[in-house]
Amino acid sequence: MLQPQWLRTFRTLVSVGNFTRTAEQLDLTQAAVSQHVRHLETQLGKLLIRHPRKLELTPAGHALLDYAREMETAEQRLAQRLAGNEDSHGDIRLITPGSIGLALYPRLLALQQASPGLNIHHRFAPTREVVESVLENRFELGIVTQKPDDPRLSVTELTREPLELVVPAGVEIHDWRDLETLGFIDHPDGQDMASRLLSRRFPGNPGVRSLPRSGSTNQISLILEPVARGLGFSVVPRHAREAFQNPQAIKVVAPADGDVEVVDTLWWITRAEWPLSARARRVQRDLQAGL
Image: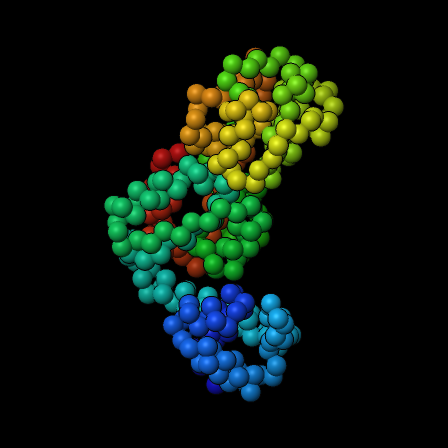
């Protein structure tokens, strides 16, 4: 029989990659950590290959890690079910794209202040990771920018979010050459967002890839910082622009008469097979009411 403590030790060891740090994190001795691994290997065969600076999992090790994660998920589901009717205590696990996450996180903290028994766990992630995390039950609530069609997911519309062309304050944009002069501040979704918006604003343009890149960042909260310093322009969702801390240094280029806004729909996703906890339903209601 596999003892739960052995599984916790193994899962932590794989996560941190070091026997000493595992012992410190679990408040065990290093000898105890090694003993737990030996117990597991006695029953299951070799699980780890020890290299000087890393640990490598054997096929048996990968299988055990999957099993340990499944057990952890089952424990979380049990805890959620036992506390599912309580909307002011327990964990709230929400995973979102960056832009909407910037807008929602302060509201989540306000919710936690109003109900100190709640524990907020919020992660920023692209749509693919959001879907995977909800399907694997690591997060109860997710928000995505593309509507998934997986039958295991329940999908409902949250809000609609326009894309915006943002330039330094005082800069005028009349044609494509003005964008070429500024240069593009890129980000992980920048090429896609800019292509969709600029194709509407500047029909027949040679494409965003033809523009000089003046910089890039993968931090959603920092995308507009170089724009504010006059180093280029970017295309971001409205919530990212609204959350920027230096709004007087930037300007949104409004669409011309007749231009159609480019708008992304944001979707709630949850597992379809079981009901949401009361606290998750409360989060949905409170956050949606503020958008």
